[in-house]
Image (cartoon, helix red, strand yellow):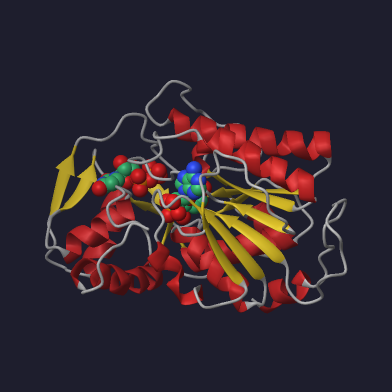
Length: 338
Ligand code: NAD
Ligand code: UDP
Protein backbone atom coordinates (compact mmCIF):
# COMPACT_ATOMS: atom_id res chain seq x y z
CA UNK A 1 0.00 0.00 0.00
CA UNK A 2 1.57 3.27 1.05
CA UNK A 3 5.06 1.91 1.40
CA UNK A 4 5.08 0.30 -2.02
CA UNK A 5 3.66 3.50 -3.44
CA UNK A 6 6.35 5.72 -1.99
CA UNK A 7 9.19 3.35 -2.85
CA UNK A 8 7.90 3.35 -6.38
CA UNK A 9 9.27 6.86 -6.88
CA UNK A 10 12.72 5.75 -5.76
CA UNK A 11 13.01 3.31 -8.61
CA UNK A 12 15.72 4.08 -11.12
CA UNK A 13 14.12 4.18 -14.52
CA UNK A 14 15.69 1.97 -17.14
CA UNK A 15 18.91 1.26 -15.34
CA UNK A 16 21.26 0.25 -18.09
CA UNK A 17 18.44 0.84 -20.53
CA UNK A 18 18.42 2.30 -24.00
CA UNK A 19 15.10 4.11 -23.89
CA UNK A 20 15.45 7.89 -23.50
CA UNK A 21 14.90 8.89 -19.89
CA UNK A 22 13.60 12.00 -18.22
CA UNK A 23 10.28 11.61 -20.00
CA UNK A 24 8.32 10.79 -17.00
CA UNK A 25 8.28 11.92 -13.45
CA UNK A 26 4.86 10.56 -12.69
CA UNK A 27 4.17 6.98 -13.61
CA UNK A 28 6.04 4.08 -15.08
CA UNK A 29 5.21 2.32 -18.34
CA UNK A 30 4.49 -1.22 -17.33
CA UNK A 31 3.84 -4.31 -19.43
CA UNK A 32 1.71 -7.00 -17.81
CA UNK A 33 1.67 -10.20 -19.87
CA UNK A 34 -1.34 -12.34 -18.99
CA UNK A 35 -2.95 -9.19 -17.60
CA UNK A 36 -6.46 -10.26 -18.65
CA UNK A 37 -6.23 -13.26 -16.32
CA UNK A 38 -7.12 -13.70 -12.69
CA UNK A 39 -3.96 -12.42 -10.96
CA UNK A 40 -2.93 -10.12 -13.81
CA UNK A 41 -6.15 -8.12 -13.82
CA UNK A 42 -5.92 -7.44 -10.08
CA UNK A 43 -2.33 -6.34 -10.55
CA UNK A 44 -3.37 -4.01 -13.39
CA UNK A 45 -6.04 -2.46 -11.12
CA UNK A 46 -3.37 -1.59 -8.55
CA UNK A 47 -0.88 -0.21 -11.08
CA UNK A 48 -3.47 1.99 -12.81
CA UNK A 49 -4.71 3.16 -9.41
CA UNK A 50 -1.25 4.36 -8.42
CA UNK A 51 -0.79 6.31 -11.65
CA UNK A 52 1.21 4.07 -13.95
CA UNK A 53 0.63 3.47 -17.65
CA UNK A 54 -0.17 -0.18 -18.28
CA UNK A 55 0.04 -2.25 -21.44
CA UNK A 56 -1.56 -5.67 -21.22
CA UNK A 57 -0.54 -8.38 -23.67
CA UNK A 58 -2.84 -11.40 -23.59
CA UNK A 59 -4.06 -14.02 -26.06
CA UNK A 60 -7.27 -14.61 -24.04
CA UNK A 61 -6.47 -18.26 -23.68
CA UNK A 62 -7.92 -18.25 -20.16
CA UNK A 63 -8.13 -14.49 -19.62
CA UNK A 64 -11.19 -12.35 -20.32
CA UNK A 65 -11.76 -8.79 -21.48
CA UNK A 66 -14.41 -8.58 -18.77
CA UNK A 67 -11.63 -8.57 -16.17
CA UNK A 68 -10.32 -5.28 -17.56
CA UNK A 69 -13.39 -3.37 -18.84
CA UNK A 70 -13.05 -0.93 -15.94
CA UNK A 71 -9.92 0.50 -17.67
CA UNK A 72 -11.12 0.62 -21.26
CA UNK A 73 -11.69 4.39 -21.26
CA UNK A 74 -8.38 5.21 -19.61
CA UNK A 75 -5.62 6.87 -21.67
CA UNK A 76 -3.13 5.12 -19.38
CA UNK A 77 -4.34 1.66 -20.39
CA UNK A 78 -3.81 -0.43 -23.52
CA UNK A 79 -4.87 -4.00 -24.27
CA UNK A 80 -3.12 -5.97 -27.02
CA UNK A 81 -4.28 -9.38 -28.21
CA UNK A 82 -1.03 -11.20 -28.75
CA UNK A 83 0.52 -14.58 -28.03
CA UNK A 84 3.86 -14.16 -26.22
CA UNK A 85 5.16 -17.18 -28.08
CA UNK A 86 5.63 -14.59 -30.88
CA UNK A 87 8.01 -11.66 -30.29
CA UNK A 88 6.62 -8.14 -29.81
CA UNK A 89 8.21 -4.68 -29.85
CA UNK A 90 7.20 -2.31 -27.02
CA UNK A 91 8.90 0.39 -24.97
CA UNK A 92 8.41 -0.12 -21.24
CA UNK A 93 10.16 0.36 -17.90
CA UNK A 94 8.97 -2.80 -16.18
CA UNK A 95 7.60 -6.17 -17.27
CA UNK A 96 5.42 -8.36 -15.08
CA UNK A 97 5.46 -11.67 -16.96
CA UNK A 98 2.37 -13.67 -15.99
CA UNK A 99 1.25 -15.10 -19.33
CA UNK A 100 0.93 -18.84 -18.90
CA UNK A 101 -1.72 -21.51 -19.18
CA UNK A 102 -1.85 -21.82 -15.41
CA UNK A 103 -4.27 -24.53 -14.41
CA UNK A 104 -3.98 -28.29 -14.80
CA UNK A 105 -6.70 -28.48 -17.46
CA UNK A 106 -5.01 -25.79 -19.56
CA UNK A 107 -1.31 -25.88 -19.01
CA UNK A 108 -0.43 -28.79 -21.18
CA UNK A 109 -1.40 -26.83 -24.28
CA UNK A 110 1.56 -24.71 -25.24
CA UNK A 111 5.18 -23.79 -24.72
CA UNK A 112 4.46 -20.35 -23.26
CA UNK A 113 6.73 -20.86 -20.28
CA UNK A 114 9.84 -21.41 -22.35
CA UNK A 115 9.39 -19.57 -25.64
CA UNK A 116 7.16 -16.83 -24.19
CA UNK A 117 9.55 -16.16 -21.33
CA UNK A 118 12.50 -16.01 -23.71
CA UNK A 119 10.70 -13.46 -25.88
CA UNK A 120 9.80 -11.27 -22.91
CA UNK A 121 13.38 -11.48 -21.60
CA UNK A 122 14.54 -10.41 -25.03
CA UNK A 123 12.21 -7.44 -24.86
CA UNK A 124 13.50 -6.55 -21.37
CA UNK A 125 17.06 -6.72 -22.65
CA UNK A 126 16.38 -4.53 -25.69
CA UNK A 127 14.70 -1.71 -23.73
CA UNK A 128 16.47 -2.16 -20.39
CA UNK A 129 13.28 -2.94 -18.49
CA UNK A 130 13.14 -4.63 -15.13
CA UNK A 131 11.63 -8.12 -15.54
CA UNK A 132 9.57 -10.04 -12.99
CA UNK A 133 8.68 -13.66 -13.69
CA UNK A 134 5.80 -15.37 -11.90
CA UNK A 135 7.09 -18.81 -11.08
CA UNK A 136 5.27 -21.26 -8.89
CA UNK A 137 5.42 -23.47 -5.82
CA UNK A 138 5.20 -26.33 -8.34
CA UNK A 139 8.96 -25.92 -8.89
CA UNK A 140 9.25 -27.80 -5.58
CA UNK A 141 7.32 -30.73 -7.10
CA UNK A 142 6.11 -33.22 -4.50
CA UNK A 143 8.37 -31.67 -1.86
CA UNK A 144 10.44 -33.76 0.51
CA UNK A 145 11.03 -30.71 2.73
CA UNK A 146 8.27 -29.06 4.68
CA UNK A 147 7.60 -26.15 4.70
CA UNK A 148 9.38 -25.22 1.48
CA UNK A 149 12.25 -22.75 1.68
CA UNK A 150 13.60 -20.99 -1.43
CA UNK A 151 16.90 -22.84 -1.12
CA UNK A 152 15.17 -26.21 -1.58
CA UNK A 153 15.74 -27.57 -5.11
CA UNK A 154 12.57 -29.59 -5.29
CA UNK A 155 11.39 -33.06 -6.19
CA UNK A 156 9.93 -32.93 -9.68
CA UNK A 157 9.05 -35.84 -11.96
CA UNK A 158 10.46 -34.71 -15.33
CA UNK A 159 8.17 -36.98 -17.38
CA UNK A 160 4.91 -36.82 -15.44
CA UNK A 161 1.55 -35.34 -16.48
CA UNK A 162 2.20 -32.03 -14.73
CA UNK A 163 5.87 -31.75 -15.66
CA UNK A 164 5.32 -29.40 -18.61
CA UNK A 165 4.16 -26.85 -16.04
CA UNK A 166 6.72 -27.59 -13.30
CA UNK A 167 9.65 -27.95 -15.67
CA UNK A 168 8.41 -25.06 -17.83
CA UNK A 169 8.47 -22.76 -14.82
CA UNK A 170 11.84 -24.12 -13.68
CA UNK A 171 13.16 -23.35 -17.15
CA UNK A 172 11.58 -19.88 -17.00
CA UNK A 173 13.53 -19.27 -13.76
CA UNK A 174 16.72 -20.57 -15.37
CA UNK A 175 16.33 -18.33 -18.42
CA UNK A 176 15.60 -15.37 -16.17
CA UNK A 177 18.79 -15.91 -14.15
CA UNK A 178 20.82 -16.46 -17.34
CA UNK A 179 19.63 -13.16 -18.80
CA UNK A 180 20.40 -11.49 -15.49
CA UNK A 181 23.94 -12.89 -15.31
CA UNK A 182 24.69 -12.88 -19.01
CA UNK A 183 23.06 -9.64 -20.14
CA UNK A 184 22.85 -7.70 -16.90
CA UNK A 185 19.12 -7.18 -17.01
CA UNK A 186 17.34 -6.52 -13.72
CA UNK A 187 15.17 -9.48 -12.77
CA UNK A 188 12.82 -10.58 -9.99
CA UNK A 189 11.55 -14.11 -9.37
CA UNK A 190 8.31 -14.83 -7.49
CA UNK A 191 7.32 -18.37 -6.53
CA UNK A 192 3.58 -18.13 -6.13
CA UNK A 193 1.65 -20.57 -3.94
CA UNK A 194 -2.04 -21.43 -4.48
CA UNK A 195 -4.00 -18.20 -4.83
CA UNK A 196 -7.76 -17.58 -4.99
CA UNK A 197 -10.15 -14.67 -5.30
CA UNK A 198 -12.67 -12.94 -7.56
CA UNK A 199 -12.17 -13.40 -11.33
CA UNK A 200 -10.66 -16.85 -10.98
CA UNK A 201 -11.54 -19.05 -13.92
CA UNK A 202 -14.73 -20.85 -12.90
CA UNK A 203 -14.17 -24.18 -14.60
CA UNK A 204 -10.41 -24.52 -14.65
CA UNK A 205 -10.37 -27.44 -12.26
CA UNK A 206 -8.51 -25.76 -9.42
CA UNK A 207 -9.77 -26.81 -6.04
CA UNK A 208 -11.03 -23.50 -4.64
CA UNK A 209 -12.91 -22.55 -7.81
CA UNK A 210 -14.30 -26.09 -8.07
CA UNK A 211 -15.58 -26.19 -4.49
CA UNK A 212 -17.08 -22.69 -4.61
CA UNK A 213 -18.81 -23.27 -7.95
CA UNK A 214 -20.03 -26.70 -6.83
CA UNK A 215 -21.46 -25.38 -3.54
CA UNK A 216 -23.24 -22.53 -5.37
CA UNK A 217 -24.67 -24.93 -7.95
CA UNK A 218 -25.80 -27.32 -5.21
CA UNK A 219 -23.48 -30.01 -6.53
CA UNK A 220 -21.33 -32.20 -4.29
CA UNK A 221 -17.81 -30.95 -3.51
CA UNK A 222 -15.39 -33.26 -5.29
CA UNK A 223 -12.55 -34.21 -2.98
CA UNK A 224 -9.75 -36.04 -4.78
CA UNK A 225 -8.02 -38.94 -3.04
CA UNK A 226 -8.49 -39.14 0.73
CA UNK A 227 -8.60 -35.33 1.01
CA UNK A 228 -5.70 -35.32 3.47
CA UNK A 229 -3.28 -33.68 1.04
CA UNK A 230 -2.57 -30.08 2.01
CA UNK A 231 -2.28 -26.70 0.33
CA UNK A 232 -1.87 -23.16 1.65
CA UNK A 233 -4.28 -20.68 0.14
CA UNK A 234 -3.46 -17.04 -0.43
CA UNK A 235 -5.97 -14.29 -1.20
CA UNK A 236 -5.18 -12.43 -4.42
CA UNK A 237 -4.74 -8.95 -2.90
CA UNK A 238 -1.96 -10.29 -0.67
CA UNK A 239 -0.20 -11.72 -3.72
CA UNK A 240 -0.50 -8.48 -5.70
CA UNK A 241 1.01 -6.54 -2.80
CA UNK A 242 3.88 -9.05 -2.70
CA UNK A 243 4.50 -8.86 -6.45
CA UNK A 244 4.67 -5.06 -6.39
CA UNK A 245 6.99 -5.02 -3.37
CA UNK A 246 9.23 -7.54 -5.09
CA UNK A 247 9.34 -5.54 -8.33
CA UNK A 248 10.09 -2.28 -6.50
CA UNK A 249 12.56 -3.80 -4.05
CA UNK A 250 16.28 -4.49 -4.40
CA UNK A 251 16.30 -8.27 -4.34
CA UNK A 252 16.25 -10.74 -7.22
CA UNK A 253 14.79 -13.62 -5.25
CA UNK A 254 13.42 -16.18 -5.73
CA UNK A 255 10.81 -15.31 -3.12
CA UNK A 256 7.99 -17.55 -1.96
CA UNK A 257 4.74 -15.57 -2.05
CA UNK A 258 2.01 -17.50 -0.29
CA UNK A 259 -0.05 -17.76 2.84
CA UNK A 260 1.53 -20.19 5.31
CA UNK A 261 -1.77 -21.34 6.83
CA UNK A 262 -2.05 -24.91 5.65
CA UNK A 263 -5.32 -26.79 5.06
CA UNK A 264 -6.21 -30.32 4.04
CA UNK A 265 -8.69 -30.51 1.15
CA UNK A 266 -11.27 -31.81 3.62
CA UNK A 267 -10.71 -28.76 5.82
CA UNK A 268 -11.06 -26.53 2.78
CA UNK A 269 -14.34 -28.27 1.92
CA UNK A 270 -15.49 -27.52 5.46
CA UNK A 271 -14.67 -23.80 5.16
CA UNK A 272 -16.58 -23.73 1.87
CA UNK A 273 -19.55 -25.43 3.54
CA UNK A 274 -19.47 -22.89 6.40
CA UNK A 275 -19.24 -20.00 3.93
CA UNK A 276 -21.78 -21.06 1.31
CA UNK A 277 -23.90 -24.06 2.23
CA UNK A 278 -23.57 -26.13 5.41
CA UNK A 279 -25.51 -28.92 3.71
CA UNK A 280 -23.19 -29.22 0.70
CA UNK A 281 -22.26 -32.88 0.23
CA UNK A 282 -18.75 -34.20 -0.21
CA UNK A 283 -17.95 -36.78 -2.87
CA UNK A 284 -14.62 -38.59 -3.07
CA UNK A 285 -12.95 -39.03 -6.46
CA UNK A 286 -9.70 -40.75 -7.46
CA UNK A 287 -6.75 -38.37 -7.22
CA UNK A 288 -4.68 -37.20 -10.17
CA UNK A 289 -1.21 -38.54 -10.84
CA UNK A 290 1.79 -36.91 -9.15
CA UNK A 291 -0.39 -34.82 -6.86
CA UNK A 292 1.88 -33.14 -4.29
CA UNK A 293 1.01 -34.41 -0.79
CA UNK A 294 1.91 -31.30 1.17
CA UNK A 295 2.57 -27.73 0.35
CA UNK A 296 3.27 -24.77 2.59
CA UNK A 297 5.52 -21.79 1.98
CA UNK A 298 8.26 -20.66 4.32
CA UNK A 299 7.97 -16.89 3.83
CA UNK A 300 10.76 -15.78 6.17
CA UNK A 301 12.74 -14.36 3.25
CA UNK A 302 9.85 -12.23 1.92
CA UNK A 303 9.05 -11.06 5.46
CA UNK A 304 12.63 -9.97 6.08
CA UNK A 305 13.67 -8.56 2.70
CA UNK A 306 10.35 -7.29 1.31
CA UNK A 307 8.58 -6.50 4.58
CA UNK A 308 5.69 -8.54 3.24
CA UNK A 309 3.29 -11.01 4.77
CA UNK A 310 -0.27 -12.04 3.91
CA UNK A 311 -3.09 -10.40 5.85
CA UNK A 312 -6.27 -12.10 4.58
CA UNK A 313 -7.28 -15.43 6.14
CA UNK A 314 -9.16 -18.11 4.20
CA UNK A 315 -12.37 -17.50 6.13
CA UNK A 316 -12.17 -13.76 5.39
CA UNK A 317 -11.08 -14.12 1.78
CA UNK A 318 -13.46 -16.82 0.63
CA UNK A 319 -16.68 -14.74 0.99
CA UNK A 320 -15.03 -12.07 -1.16
CA UNK A 321 -14.86 -14.43 -4.13
CA UNK A 322 -18.24 -16.04 -3.56
CA UNK A 323 -20.19 -12.95 -4.59
CA UNK A 324 -18.20 -12.70 -7.84
CA UNK A 325 -18.78 -16.39 -8.60
CA UNK A 326 -22.48 -16.09 -7.77
CA UNK A 327 -22.84 -13.25 -10.27
CA UNK A 328 -20.90 -14.99 -12.99
CA UNK A 329 -22.73 -18.30 -12.54
CA UNK A 330 -26.27 -17.00 -12.05
CA UNK A 331 -26.14 -13.35 -13.18
CA UNK A 332 -27.24 -11.95 -16.55
CA UNK A 333 -23.68 -11.10 -17.38
CA UNK A 334 -22.57 -13.80 -19.78
CA UNK A 335 -19.04 -15.09 -19.51
CA UNK A 336 -17.13 -13.80 -22.51
CA UNK A 337 -13.96 -15.44 -23.67
CA UNK A 338 -12.36 -12.36 -25.15
P1 NAD B 1 -4.87 -17.10 -15.53
O1 NAD B 1 -5.05 -18.28 -16.40
O2 NAD B 1 -6.08 -16.44 -14.99
O3 NAD B 1 -3.99 -16.01 -16.25
C1 NAD B 1 -3.03 -16.30 -17.22
C2 NAD B 1 -3.21 -15.32 -18.35
O4 NAD B 1 -2.21 -15.55 -19.36
C3 NAD B 1 -4.57 -15.45 -19.05
O5 NAD B 1 -5.15 -14.18 -19.20
C4 NAD B 1 -4.22 -16.08 -20.40
O6 NAD B 1 -5.14 -15.73 -21.41
C5 NAD B 1 -2.83 -15.52 -20.63
N1 NAD B 1 -2.01 -16.33 -21.53
C6 NAD B 1 -1.81 -17.67 -21.50
N2 NAD B 1 -0.98 -18.05 -22.48
C7 NAD B 1 -0.64 -16.91 -23.16
C8 NAD B 1 0.19 -16.65 -24.28
N3 NAD B 1 0.84 -17.63 -24.88
N4 NAD B 1 0.29 -15.36 -24.71
C9 NAD B 1 -0.37 -14.36 -24.09
N5 NAD B 1 -1.16 -14.55 -23.02
C10 NAD B 1 -1.29 -15.81 -22.56
O7 NAD B 1 -3.92 -17.60 -14.33
P2 NAD B 1 -3.44 -16.83 -13.02
O8 NAD B 1 -3.86 -17.65 -11.88
O9 NAD B 1 -3.83 -15.41 -13.07
O10 NAD B 1 -1.87 -16.96 -13.15
C11 NAD B 1 -1.02 -15.89 -13.46
C12 NAD B 1 0.43 -16.34 -13.31
O11 NAD B 1 0.70 -16.70 -11.96
C13 NAD B 1 0.79 -17.56 -14.15
O12 NAD B 1 2.08 -17.39 -14.69
C14 NAD B 1 0.76 -18.69 -13.17
O13 NAD B 1 1.60 -19.74 -13.56
C15 NAD B 1 1.25 -18.01 -11.92
N6 NAD B 1 0.79 -18.74 -10.73
C16 NAD B 1 -0.52 -18.66 -10.34
C17 NAD B 1 -0.94 -19.39 -9.23
C18 NAD B 1 -2.36 -19.36 -8.74
O14 NAD B 1 -2.67 -20.05 -7.79
N7 NAD B 1 -3.24 -18.56 -9.33
C19 NAD B 1 0.00 -20.17 -8.52
C20 NAD B 1 1.31 -20.22 -8.97
C21 NAD B 1 1.70 -19.49 -10.07
N1 UDP C 1 -8.59 -31.17 -5.67
C1 UDP C 1 -9.73 -31.72 -5.11
N2 UDP C 1 -10.92 -31.51 -5.73
C2 UDP C 1 -11.06 -30.79 -6.88
C3 UDP C 1 -9.89 -30.22 -7.45
C4 UDP C 1 -8.67 -30.44 -6.83
O1 UDP C 1 -9.67 -32.35 -4.06
O2 UDP C 1 -12.20 -30.64 -7.35
C5 UDP C 1 -7.30 -31.34 -4.99
C6 UDP C 1 -6.13 -31.80 -5.86
O3 UDP C 1 -6.06 -33.20 -5.91
C7 UDP C 1 -4.95 -31.19 -5.11
C8 UDP C 1 -5.50 -29.94 -4.46
O4 UDP C 1 -6.92 -30.07 -4.52
O5 UDP C 1 -4.53 -32.06 -4.11
C9 UDP C 1 -5.11 -28.66 -5.14
O6 UDP C 1 -5.36 -28.78 -6.54
P1 UDP C 1 -5.26 -27.55 -7.53
O7 UDP C 1 -5.39 -28.11 -8.90
O8 UDP C 1 -6.22 -26.50 -7.11
O9 UDP C 1 -3.82 -26.93 -7.27
P2 UDP C 1 -2.35 -27.57 -7.32
O10 UDP C 1 -2.44 -29.06 -7.29
O11 UDP C 1 -1.77 -27.05 -8.56
O12 UDP C 1 -1.72 -27.04 -6.09
